Structure formats: structure tokens, C-alpha cells
Image (cartoon, rainbow, N blue to C red; front, side, top):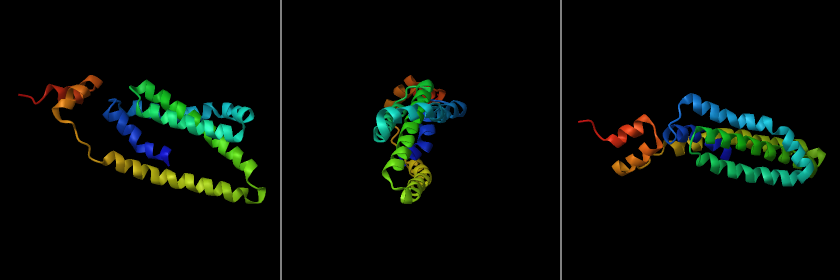
Length: 168
């Protein structure tokens, strides 16, 4: 669900704090899918080297680090790189999880176990954006005129206009 919560929040972050337009946001977000696809082979090799559980844990840790990198991205290129890293980590985590289930769960109940994991993932893909949208829609204190120079330093026409103050 944590991944799905970011669906509405990353575009808001990118637009409000980084000043990115819709095209740049789309490119940055698509980097996650590219990271997933590009790292599938490497994830399979990681399973051979680290085992199922090690790969699962490495993927989960890397996802946490990539999430922090997404939240702290200073620009569009850094956001795209962090999204790519998140996709790569997601590939590790998902393949590690599937491989672990294959080994840890008896064949007779493996289908139910995979169905339960899949059901949770699909429910999270619905609930996550709802929660994230609610978080993104919450009113935030604007910081008044004291925050305007900080916004202007980050760039963007709206931020520069806010720093200039009201037109006379």
C-alpha cells in the first residue's frame, strides 16, 4: 500500500515543490516501470546469489531508501533516478517474494497463498491512492510571506511572483 499511496503524492510534490510540468512528471514516473523491467534479470541473479529471503529483504530495504530519495529529490532528473531505483527495488522485492512463496508454501496451498498476496496488492492499488489523495488534499499552512523567499529560491514563476509581493 505504501507504493500506491505515492501515486497521487509524487505528481503533487513534483508540481508544487519542483515546478515540473505534466510531461516531466510523466517521464519521471515512467522511470519506475523502466527500472522494474530493466532489473528483472538482475533480480533473478540476486535470488541465485542471496537466496529468496535475502533478495526479498534487500528489495524491501532498497524500496525504503528509494522512497526517501523520491521524497527528497531536488529536481526532475533526481526524481526520475529515484523512481528508477524504486522500480529496480520493487523488482527485487517481488521476485524474492514469489520465489520465497514457491519454496516456503506447500504445493497444495501455494495457489491460495499467491492469491492472497495478489488480492492484497490489488486492494492496496485502490486504497493507496485514496489515502494518498486525502493526504495531498489536506490544507497546509502556507508559511506566509516568510516562506516566499524559500519558494522563490526553488524556482518557478508562481514562486517568484509570490516573492515579489502584491502588484502596486
